Amino acid sequence: MIFVFYFFAALLIFLSYRSFIGGIAYRNFLRDKHAAPRSGDEPFATILAPCRGGDAEFSENLARLFQQEYRDYEIVFAVDDPEDDAVPEIRRAISEFKDVPAKLIVAAKAKSNAQKAENLREAVLHVAPQSKVFAFVDSDVRISPDWLGRLTAPLANESVGASTGYRWFVSQRPTLANELLSAWNASIASALGPNRKSNFCWGGSTGILRSTFERLDIRGKWSSIVAEDFVLTRAVQDAGLDVEFVPHAICASPADVSTLSLWEFTTRQIKITRVYRSDLWGLSFFGSALFCTVIVGAIVIAVFSGNVVERSVAVATLILVTVFSVHKSYFRVRSVADVISSSSRELRRHRITHAALFALTPALFLLNSIAALFSRTILWRSTEYKMVSPTETIVRETKFRED
Image 1: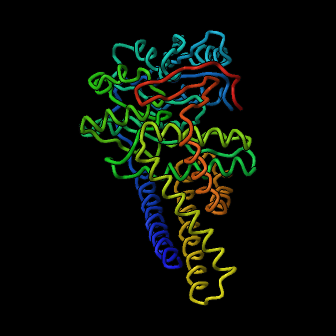
Image 2: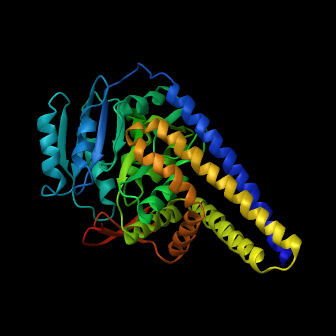
């Protein structure tokens, strides 16, 4: 049995080392991209912003949409209810920032689709005729002034089908739930990088040429689905095109969650992944199970084994995995701090908390992955969805909105 532990301990150490090297590469990539000059090509663009309810700092998020350093663009906001809490703030922003053309449209209630996807399907029908680029953004993120210009620049490359950023949860209070949410999400964010073939679109910060969107029939593919970004990624890759990660399009997202909300959010993401990318779910399951099993086994052996060799191997495993994991977390936060300068104070705290939570994050991933085995039902923005398959969704019933 001890040789089984040796084998998996060696595997975990190797994977931890690979992850550590990946962290260095991630930092170098973000640093180089951050220093790169901005492209001067700025075709007319449309920001499409599906909204529901009043997110944290919603008015500030709206203002940033209107304050982009971009020559010509418009904004199309989409809701599913004219009485939604977001509507008054959207109307106020449209009235206040008159220099940027903007409109608010109301989509139909989704019957076999995620409401966000339904909002986007309706929104793209209302873009200006001269629009050349679509930029999708979530209402709960805080974008930088050059977000739109940076996001659209890679699309001038004919091999790039879409460009993407990602979210970075900025904890508003130093609670365990907030910090764990940020650390959990950060481990996914660092999966993006220079490899365009393996990158994926994140729907809260994604750009695509209108011609590509229409040629790939993305609107048609956004029927009876929940994860519009997974569907977009698959369509782009199936067309032989790449997805370019844009560090400047990483968006800060305020986080102040309860333990229950943390569990609901993280489990929802893994459930969606299991349905739309079962291979990624399998890797997450295996990786988190390997980490947790080896770490627990190493602690038990280090404490209770009377064999010097066994204890030495166990202690060495704990030390090496800890060193690699802590430094990976540190490099990751340092890299993003250069991009999201507006949240520098919170990110300084993340350097410590993300490193401290390196062992708890895989445990949460493991629990999420197990939960995804037994259910394909999620609660998202007050509505319950059952994901029968990647192309079939059942909208079950409306719930009270989660925290």
